[in-house]
Amino acid sequence: MPETVVAHTPAPKAAEAGAKRTALFGGKIPLAKLRDLALVPAIVVIAIIGQIVSPIFLQPDNLINVLQQMAEIAVLVLAQTMILIVKKMDLSLESTMGLAPGVAAWLVVPTGATHGLGLLPGAWAVPVTLAVGALIGVINSLLIIRFGLNGFIVTLGMLIVVRGTLTGISGGQTFFQLPESMLYLGTAEWFGMPASIWLCLLLFAVAIVVLGWTSFGRSLYAIGGNVDAAKAAGIRTDRVLWIVLVTGSVLAALAGLMLSGRLASVASAQGNGYIFTVFAAAVIGGISLNGGKGTMFGAFCGILLLFMIQNVLTLGGVPAQWIGALNGLIILVALMISRITGGKVQE
Image (cartoon, rainbow, N blue to C red):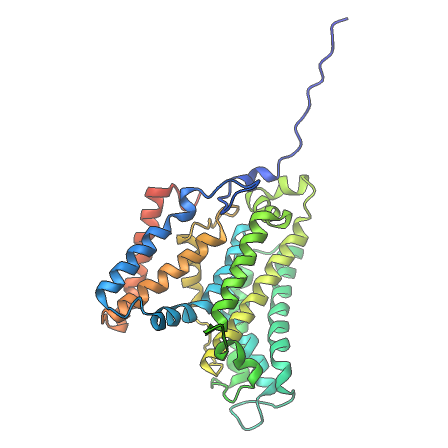
């Protein structure tokens, strides 16, 4: 009898989508592709231009100032990057950045200081801030994952609800007289540099390791690349999505705490408009809006480049009214250059 040959059907390759991602370091993950480092030359060029425009650009005080102002939005970029990699998006992060510390201030600021209720001691401010962020993430996750609603519409609606809630509890005013616990991350220094900068760098370092070297990180890329293949490979996709969305909201709350500490207040409009810069930084940094591609290193370079350009424009005496328009133009040019030199920004 002729020998019967049984063809082996290959197992579903959920990691195939994840393999498309650009990674930063070696090991099982290939060395960074050129696209990962594509913004580094641009950052160097902007640094040189900045020094030509103003001799104080490369002074330590100015660089620390840029990094400190960048730190809060950079944490939002980190949160949004995780969410984009799994092919979701969260527009409500900017309003979470305002409401989470706003609720904490509302509950702990003494009566008579704006709209403070003085119901809780100051030590509760940080836990309350993070808890509010987590609650918003849970609601978003419930609507998006459990009920299958469109993530864009859900988070847009949540953005409006959260922003309106902050305006309501604050009466449209700004909370002052914040407790020391809320001021710490914005005022403390670690090893001669603001704590917010160290925290931002630490969070990005952890994210780079998680996305590059852990099975959880590979799950994110697999889900963003092909969620059905990820399910077939045994990845608990819903659980991963819950973790990502809730973590993103908690990070937004933490970013709000950093900003409130630096400004020693919580404004009723805190965070408004930040989401545009967040998306721009992520996309310029190589994060695909279609999921499954990009690295945290690229996202960090994207937000760093934007803030360096803004600082150069300010030092160059460009009127503040024009900086927004120029930033938008720079973003469009950067996207076109990225498409030409590194292939498609989005696929």
